[in-house]
Length: 243
Image (cartoon, rainbow, N blue to C red; front, side, top):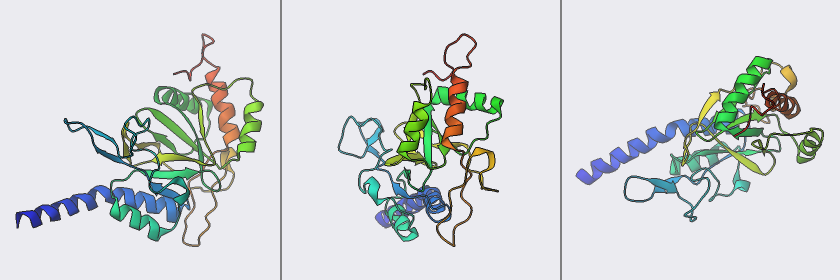
């Protein structure tokens, strides 16, 4: 009897702990048509309640926050697949496969990211969703190709070395995930698109009649220009977006 009660309790905890992630995954996949997949997640490591990456690499650089099984190519917008994944792995991190018709992102170290948002707000730059982890902040943008990104970077005299680009073939961990770096949250929550191409960006078009308007996303060119300007505006001639 004690074993049965314990099993029921674990099931309740699993369902409760995973409900938010399943709901978030279904919103991304079916409402916004963003392809998602579960991250590898965390497992017990060491003898003091520590947790490490569930992948085979004992020195994993991004514990819990990367694809493993399934791989990145399995990312989907199919609600049946999403339900099956998170029903079996309710605490798995939520990963967005960036690029193609899905959002891309620019990311900065957390301290630089906070400074960047403050400076962009001061400049009046309209921002889309912003994902925050204890180590990095990621600003979501409308989809772009690698060719366009190359042209934009070539046109700049200088780009902050702390800036990373998450485009085609990449991925980004989304809230409400937990990784080895800590909790993932929305610093700026997604806003439903009210009109196309407002503020220099465009919403991602829904591919399903069941879908609702996807969150508004700024254009990568406008955001990159603003970030470079913000970085060069330090009074002492240094960079506001340094590590």
